[in-house]
Amino acid sequence: MIKLITTVGTSLFENYLKEKEDIKTYYKQIKDKNYREYEEYFNPIEKVKRAILNFYSKNRSEDISAEIKSVKKISEYLKEDIDVYLIATDTIVSRVAADIIKKFLEDDGFIVKFNPKIDIIKGLQVKNKEQFINEGLSNLIKRINEILEEEYYGNVAFNISGGYKANIPYFTMMAQINGCDTYYIFEDTEELISIPAAPITIDIEMFEKYNREFTELSSCIDNYSKWRENHYEFVNEARSCIEIADNIACLSPIGEILWENYRNRYNIFFATKNVIEKIKNNKILAQKVVKFLSEDNIRNGKTEIKGLKIKHKVYDDGNNNYRIVYDQRDDQIYIYAIFDYEPDEIKFINDPKQSNRIEDYDFTQYKIDKQSLMIDLFNTELNYAE
Image 1 (tube, one colour):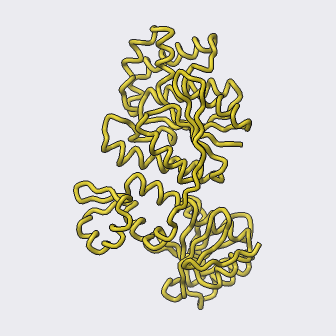
Image 2 (spheres, one colour; image 1 turned 135 degrees about the horizontal axis):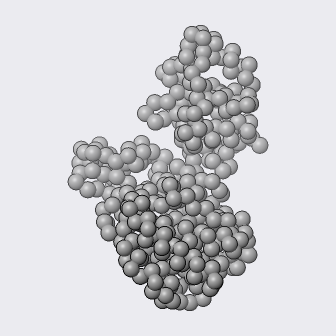
Image 3 (cartoon, helix red, strand yellow; image 1 turned 60 degrees about the vertical axis):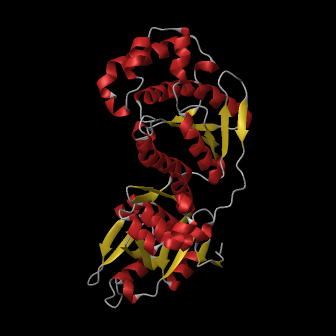
């Protein structure tokens, strides 16, 4: 099964208007409107939607839209089941198009994922260049990475036949960096263009060496000129990853794509030697650690404060024996005890001699590959025991 990330444009309306003009007035009312105005234009939206659904329900064709045509061509080409993930821009017409495309593709047997709350990308529009770069692209990268995180990258492909042409370079870049194939179908033709994933090697060492700098830039830096003085070597090496405006520095689109790619492949954390020995000799425990490190909401929701005298943060995985005892400082996770047998965890947290202070433990920084569960220590590989 292939997850096909598909951008949504406006070819649906353009093609319909070549056949009929009954929605022309209503379409003009919503054509250039931001998605936040959706409720205000509910009546013309419904008239446009109803007219297109009624017409094409009786006059079905693959040429209804670039998105529908390309999805069917890609499905035929791959000869595999496809789940379609629609990505819409921050406009009313893209939302309406996505709703209609979803309906027709589902009628043809495709599984289609489109949730307006997360799949309409805020700020992704072409009227305001600054908003497009600073907000739209950033939100787009985050949403794409959420989809990529759900599946091994080799099972994800990009369909860039629809949507803004300004988005194409960024979608192509994300696909190539993440090892995904890209597909495109020319308008008014039957030819499907396939762009295979290239053998791109990411400089992992740079992200490890400058982990703190990339982390700080991901939240933006207010006084860049002062910050640059203390990070001159990084600025020199990673200039293309930095975008500056009014002395405020953030990750550039390419920087954010590369940084998110790295973060999606690895978890960075601190742990004691004893914890690492347990993780690398227990595959299930390693999987629990990856889940614990990857999903902030789950980690926070399953963390309890335990202990009779000394209070410890304990990640309770649920109806099983897996427990992770940790602390967090400056967005860094420090694991100082880990258990696969609940009685041992209870004994530990109720022992008044067991400290909850980071300073009382000998921590080392590690990274764990989310797919292979391989653990690395400062570029020294620790072989994970199956």
